Length: 81
Image (tube, rainbow, N blue to C red; front, top):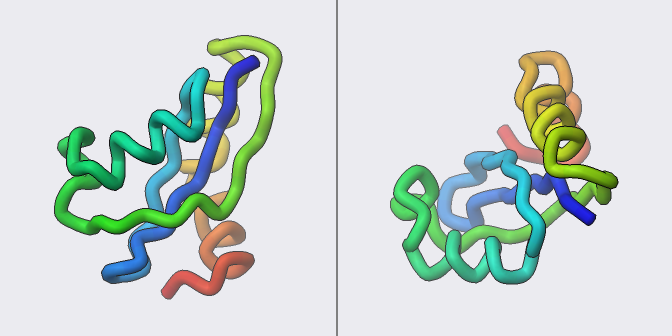
């Protein structure tokens, strides 16, 4: 299984959307500062995970969630401003 996931920065409320095969490990990397794009806004909180059958489906979901309309819905849902 593969996953598309949504993180919220507990520092400033920024949102990060990604995909991975191991969500727990990936979250640890984000919070340890080992992911360049998320390092400045640590710590991160996992707020949504979507399970998908393949890496390509997870990447498609990641791209969909990153689209402007979907991202606005996620922000509203998770109260990010």
